[in-house]
Length: 327
Ligand SMILES: Cc1cc2nc3c(=O)[nH]c(=O)nc-3n(C[C@H](O)[C@H](O)[C@H](O)COP(=O)(O)O)c2cc1C
Image 1: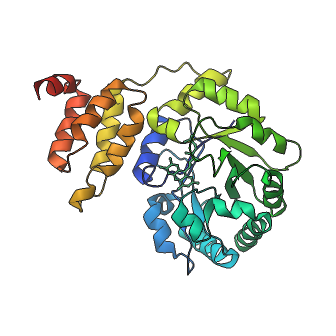
Image 2 (image 1 turned 90 degrees about the vertical axis):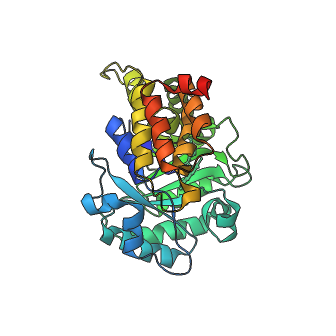
């Protein structure tokens, strides 16, 4: 079983990939989507999104980082992929799942799921443009309005020579509303000749087991669950792999230290954005850790680097509760 860390624009950046892959359990990461609009994207943009490209295309823990492209023009997508590979990308991932209106209006993301041929043309163009040693993967939803084109889309992607397909088991119309329809992925088993990865609503090991069983997939991708529980991939391996060593859930003190590292690595040059990504992460962590809720409440209105640093530090020492009641 491969476990992939999902691309998440605005929160799973280079620092988050380092932190989560250091905790372990992941086989691969994917960058946040990089949009290809009027011109092919130059190599320097890829290096900015993925500093790992300068170090062999891997995180410090040795986990490969594929570059994700989003766009509707096959030629510009292909030329961008060539630049990404030249910049050091060990693989390319193509996004056909983004539900954002602004992205869909500009001919990218899940809107393309209504046109299986064009999806195939984009994958073909990218596959032909880069060296055959470079994997080209795709990420889709079950469909745009409904699941009626799922097989057509998946078959075009397979015929175009993709190495792997990840399916977020919801349509664009479903948004992020639970549940994820893992069972819908099963209809691709047997007819689509490439490894399939199931994604969506996996928050604990039991969900991973159910997603694999319902979809018939061998591989998983974790998004929000990985943020809510930074050791989720390790916990899933311990629960599902016969040789998996037992795993003790990470205590809050260790998680809070990771939150501090994440915060210290964020760009603090524009005051009003200070702490945004950290607050977003705490928004997921509080689903799992009550201490994260306290910390979130304490930092949510602050844009002061010194103050946020101190508050996280107090949380790492378990002192936030006392602070909260004194305030
Ligand atoms: C804030 C946010 C940002 C996301 N950014 C991306 C992205 O850049 N590329 C992509 O393919 N999917 C993106 N996704 C979708 C996730 O990769 C994933 O498919 C989705 O969250 C379902 O998986 P989960 O239930 O494990 O979170 C994003 C999702 C969220 C919530």
